[in-house]
Image (cartoon, rainbow, N blue to C red; front, side, top):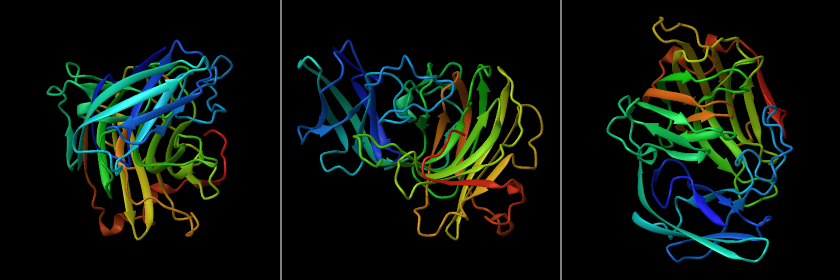
Length: 364
């Protein structure tokens, strides 16, 4: 059996959210795996989740797979190791991670990884308009789900195909009010359920019951786009967790928008929290044309019951839910200071009624 790490045996991490995420896949194994654990710097062993469902009967076009890992892993053997950023065994600088797996035949297989940990958050502004000086995607981001590649010569970041469910590459760190502007090109739109675009990611929560991997998505503000449905803005806490406190707000119905394959688009995406009310809004327009005045989607969490948890901060990241690879470039993330007449509750762009859901949802 081979334990293959998505980004190899030498990696680097910076404080972008609550966990460091090590992704990989177990190949040539006798399934189901009986045990999987990791150890950091010789410390106590910790279990990790390995996807064990055969994917032959899963309809990826329709979307949501019935698996303990929900949308975290795509194929059998994929795994996700989550190392808490505040773990006592985690040291600034050099660290050693040991991985041990016991397969169905009782054989043990091991892998090792060295990584550098930089506990300082990523400062703002975050200017990634020129990527030519970087050689590794881990120099500029951390993959939480799926995989992304850097092409410094083309000056773009690409999602890696086949694109994972809820693929996410974090570029920034947890902060308050922010605005991101970037360029996006869709390599294909036919047959894609979602095309991205980005998220102010607030973290992941444990599921109920716990299953060795965090499955509840928390978003301070997502921009999502479907070629068949339209655009949606999305806020959530614990989505897909099964926690009775989970909630999600999304634009309903979706806002009409048309995008074409191989055409470049510009995006402006904002997250704001004021007076305890969170808001997300974004607009997208063809490159080379004037930026529109109106927002395509704008939503708030005002109607979420006050006793439920809310998101105060987010880490800007590139998001996609399956489909064909996307190219992102010309990325700039800055602080966002809304004017007095631009605060949540005063934005005319949110005319469409939001959809507030509790408990387990159907697919958007």
